[in-house]
Image 1 (cartoon, rainbow, N blue to C red):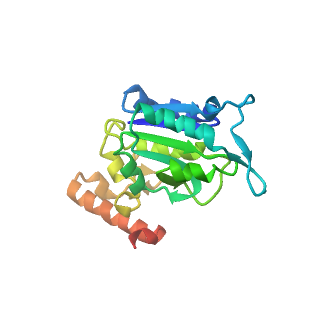
Image 2 (image 1 turned 30 degrees about the vertical axis):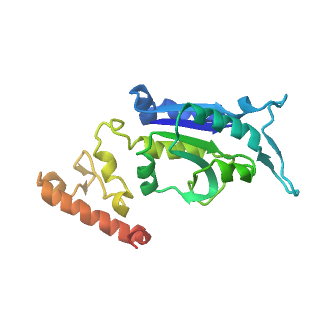
Image 3 (image 1 turned 45 degrees about the horizontal axis):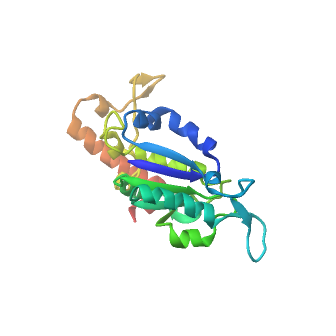
Length: 224
């Protein structure tokens, strides 16, 4: 998979991709992540990529021209499955959406900033708009990092145990069951005996019931 991220703050994007699972995925050659500084695509002497909005109002807006130049340049090199815009009014990211995106080969992610982007960008280039929650961040960069983490960890070969992602919360619209590790008895708090029994069919049924019970208690909306 290749992910191209368009941003006015490429330095903010580097850290999440240089550690842990995302870093290993790049080192293994499973994913390529490229950052594109939007200021490199403007002819403005001061590298300005934003301007006041027509009709008045507070806040600056990212201009269409540099975004057009950047996206068009990338699209000349390869075909993209999605051009995603990170925005608070987009579709809320969930596990189903992450699963779908993990099947793609090439993705562009445009990070919003200030008051957003010129609407003509959304009309002409964007194929999917995504939000990571009902709140506003200073820009789309952190949202893009969250999206990439959710997608990249699903790619074959990224996790040491590929079945791990299949038992995560929100797969099959269920929260994950409780998990335990050593010691089996810590200050009187004991691991359920069944998990120590080695009876894996019964353990699997126990986990399924725990997942369902936890979902009914904490997130009944997922079961609708």
